[in-house]
Image (cartoon, rainbow, N blue to C red; front, side, top):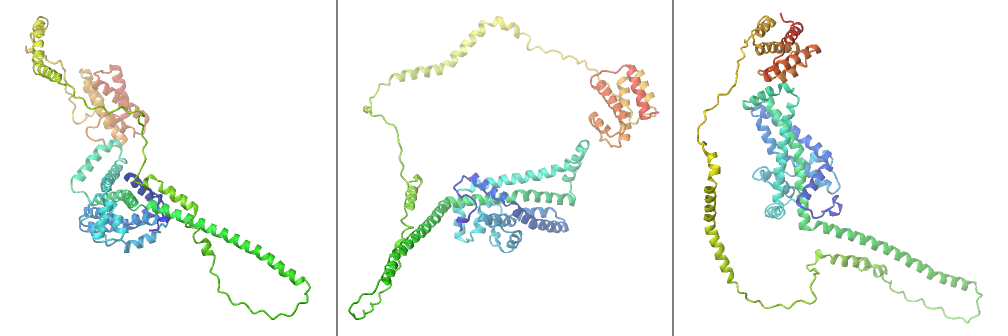
Length: 529
C-alpha cells in the first residue's frame, strides 16, 4: 500500500462521513466512471432485450440486468480505487480490465451473496485484497461487523432512489399529454398495464430501469468503498502511519541538508589549513642555501595504512539524534490519545466537614400517614359520588323541567325541496332557436338554456376540431373553445357557458331581452337554421 500517494485526507470518520467521502470520489471521477459504464452496460442491455424479445419474455431482460449489477459494479470500483493513489485509468484501460479482473469473486457475488444488504462494503474486500478461504471470511467479519448496519441502510436508501427515478421517468410521459386528455390517457395506460402490455412498453420499462440504475449504482459503490476505507483506517491506523511517513521524509530532508552544510564547512577548514603550508614551502625555496655538512640521504618513511573515512563517523548519528526529532517524539508521546493515563482537576473544599455517623431516625409517624391516605383512597370515591347525588337532588327543581320531553319522538319535517328533471332529447332538433323559444314561452327557461348550451358545445367542437370526452365539464369545454380561430366565437361561447352556469347552479334566469339577444347572436355566429 502506497499510503503516502493517497489523494484524500485519511482520518477516522463517522459512518455517514465515510459514505459522503466515497460519493465525493465518484463525483471527482464522474467522466471516467460513466463513460466506461455506458460503453459496457448499454450493449448488454440491447443484447438481453433482443434475446428476451425472441423468447417472448421481455421482462426477463430487466430481471437479468438487475441481477448482473455486481458484474457492472467493478467499473466504478476500479476507477476510484486507482484514482485514490493519483492514477485515473483511461477508458480503454478500464474496459480491458473488465475482461481479466475480478471474475473469481463473482461466483459467490452473483449466487448466494447476491442479496446481501452489505454488498457495497464487502465488495472491495473480495475484489481488491485478493484473499480467499478462511482468510477472506475473517476479513469480511472484521471489516464488516462495525459498519454492517450502515451498509444495509445505504442499500435500502439507494433502492428507494432507484424506485423514485423509475417512477419519475414513467410520470414524465404524462407531462407531454394535454390536460383535457389526461384522464382518458390515464385510463388507457392503466388498461394497458393491467392487461398484457405490448413489447414496446416492456422494453421501455427496461430502459427506464437501466437509466435509474445507471444514475444511482456508481454512488452506491463509491459509498461502500468509503465505508471500507474508514474501517481500514480505524483498524490499521492508516492516518497515523501516513503522519509518521511524512515525519520520516521531513527528517531525512533535514539530515541531508545538515550533512551538506557540515561537508562545506569541513572543506573550507581544510583549504585554510593547507594555505600556510604552501606559503612556508614557497618562502623556503626563495631563501639562499647555507653551507652545511653533507648528510646521508634520509630513508623513506614506511607506508602507513589508509585512515578510515571520517564522514560516517561524523554524520552517522546526525539523523537519529537530531534535536528536532527528539522534540517531535516527545510531543507525540505527550498526546493523551497515546497514553492510558490522564489528569483530571476537580474542586474540593479545603476544610472538609467531618463525616458524622448515621443516626437512626424515628419514622414511625409515616405509618399513620400511610394509613390515612389509604383510607381516603378507599372511601374517597364513594364520598364524591354521594356529594354529587346530593347536589343533583337539591337542584332538581332547576334542571328537571328542561329534561321533560326529551324522550318524545318528533315527526320528521317534510323537506321543501323542489326537483325538476330536464327533458332534453338525445338528438338536437333541426330548428334549435325555434325549439328554445318555444320552451322559454312555455315557462321552462332552464330547459331552453340547456338546449342552447348543448347545441353551442356541439358547434364549438366542430369549429375547434376537438373530440370532447363523455361527461365533459364546463371548464373542459371552455379550455377546448380556445382552439376556435375566431375571437368573437370564443367570447360568445364563454357568454353562453356563463349564462348556463348561473341558471343551473344559482337558479338565476336571464331576462327575456338578454335571452333573445344571446339567441340571435348564437344563430348568426353558429349558422343555426
